[in-house]
Every structure is written in C-alpha cells, then in structure tokens.
Image (tube, rainbow, N blue to C red):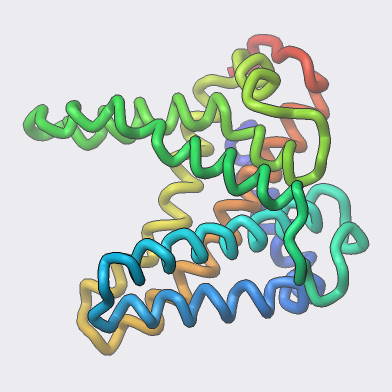
Length: 223
C-alpha cells in the first residue's frame, strides 16, 4: 500500500503541477536535451568530462525545482525556475554525486550468471534508497541529510528499496528507445528527461510519506 501511495502520488503530483513545472523546468529541460544531442557527435575526452559535470549541475537544478514544487508548492521557486546557483544546488549536486557511487560495491554481483544483475540492482537500490531522502531534504532545506535519511528509512527498507528501483527505471528506462535506431535518439532524450522528472517526483512522495510520518529523527518499522 505504501509503495502504491508513493508511485500513484508521484504521477498525480506531476499532473496536478504540470503548469508550474512546465515553466520552471523549461530552461534546464532544454539545456539537458541540448547536452544529450551533443553526445551524438564525436567529442574529445575533456569535452565529454566537462559535459558530464555541466549536465550533472543542470540535472541538480532540475531536481531541486521539482522537489520544491511538489513538496513546498509552486511558490517555492520563481515562475521560470532557478536561473542562478546557490549553496543549496551545490549541496544537492554533491549529495547526488556521492549517491551515484554507491552501486560500485555491488558490481561484482554482475558476474553471477543469470541473477547477478538482479542482485546488483536490489543491493544498490537498498543502499541508495536508505540515503536517498537526503536529496529532497537538501532541496527543501528540511534538515534531512544522509544520517537522518538512514534513521528514517530504517522502518521502510522494503518500501524504499522498491521505490528506488522504480525511480531508476523511470530515469533510465526511456533511454532504451535509442536502441531501436538513430531515428529514435531525439525521442529517447525527451522521454528520459520526462522520466527524470517522474523519478524525482517518486522521491518527493517518499519524503512526504516517511518524513511527515516519523519526523527527521527516526523511523518505526513500517516496511
């Protein structure tokens, strides 16, 4: 039931806030599409590295906007979104950068025939999920960081693991469209951007459920 509340609520939240989100995300969404198109060309290693860093910063801005609109309301960001970086966006970028490395300890599981990728996905999703509430916490400046997220999700370990799997699927699943041929490249980029918004919305809903229920200090056993 809690997972259904999170996933269904994420869809509803995005649809109900489609107007303010469309305006506030116009700039970062356009930049993300442009960056993705640049990857279609042959680039030098330095250019690729700079694009990765710049793209990560823009993704952080997009995520902060979505979290603030869905958790705090449309008045929490300017009408046309965040156009200048602050300590909040820098902190979010660093937190997200750290989380991206948490899958590394589980990569050896990929060598297990058949089920290795499943075990890797579950393990990485569990660890990333336990710390993931820090992202919306930083975005809304709600006092939830990695330590608090670990405590809060202690009672929601199954739910947060499945939530993280759903968020990963939403963010990266649409990119598989590019495998259908070069003509699908632009569509896959746009779909991936929309999937990223939905993935952020899923974490926003998890934050609202778990933090509002248990506060920023601890989580009871709720699965």
